[in-house]
Length: 116
Ligand code: SF4
Ligand code: SF4
Image 1: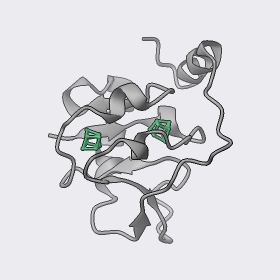
Image 2 (image 1 turned 90 degrees about the horizontal axis):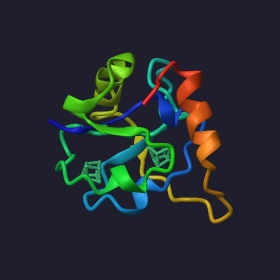
Image 3 (image 1 turned 90 degrees about the vertical axis):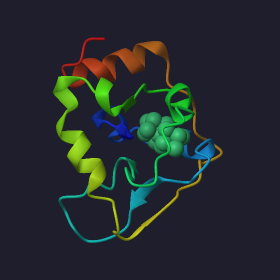
Image 4 (image 1 turned 30 degrees about the vertical axis):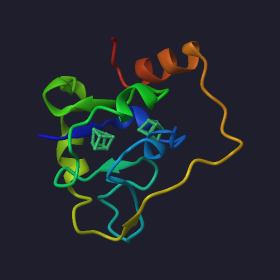
């Protein structure tokens, strides 16, 4: 079991989550494989200790426990696993990042067809 970052992170990537992960297992991909997205972060399922610390920290509500991943984002379970053993780093949060408004968070969900 592990926690999963879904497409709700795509292009949002404010990097609040890496600040709280106690085992630094939330990564940005830095290799050349185009099947692994760089415009979102990914959780290494072999390193995640299921502590839940990242979930309330994500302003875009993009992170789910694996069992709770909405069906519409199920392929993200496999996409997160692609980060295992690949070139990667733990990004730091830019100082100038603003928190999204609740309207922006809702619009991002609707963009992906996810109604929570
Ligand atoms: S806090 Fe959420 S939206 Fe931001 S980088 Fe982490 S998973 Fe992505
Ligand atoms: S659940 Fe805990 S260990 Fe897993 S990615 Fe989130 S903060 Fe890191």
